[in-house]
Each structure stands twice: as C-alpha cells, then as structure tokens.
Amino acid sequence: MAEQDPQAPINGTDRHMVEKMVGYGITGFADHFRMLSYWRRLLVGENDPEEIAQGLAMALMSGRYIPTPRPTRAPAITINVSGNLYPEALASAIKSAVEQAFAGHR
Image (cartoon, rainbow, N blue to C red):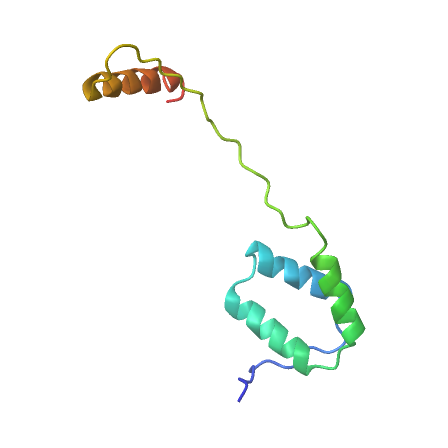
C-alpha cells in the first residue's frame, strides 16, 4: 500500500515547475523527504501528463547538470635514479622531489 502524503495533492502544475523541482532534486537543494512529498502529491493530483513529460525532458537535457570541475594542482615530478637502486636512496629522492614540487603550495 502506498503511503499517503498529509498535504493536499498538487493540481494544475506546469512544465516549468516540474523542471524546477527536478533541478532541486539533482542539485541537492531539496532533501529526499521534500522531493518524495512533492512527487507523491503531483502524481495523485489532476495534472496533464504532457506537461509533466515536457518538464522532465527540459530538466534532463543533455549536459545540464554536469558538474564544473574544480581547479586542481597536479605538479609533475621527475625522479632520475642512476647506479644501484637502494630503497633508502629512492625514498630520499622521492622525498626531495615532492618537497621541491610542493614548496610554494603551502
């Protein structure tokens, strides 16, 4: 048996409201319970299925909610080791290279 929402059904919604609510759900503006309440009330209300479909299509357009990548720091580190490879020498070379790479990033 489906749960009943204590609030009244939503009637006569348009595509722009559906688009807005999908966006709120995707971006995390509205929490799970608020979204669940909205969709339950929308689906039991008297609404045009075409308006709901258009709103969903508008909200889920390709590329609309792709997050913008955050700027990152990724310095290149090159380590040259010659002669016999000793773990202590390699560790020292890595430590020195990392310290040089991140010297100005603190």
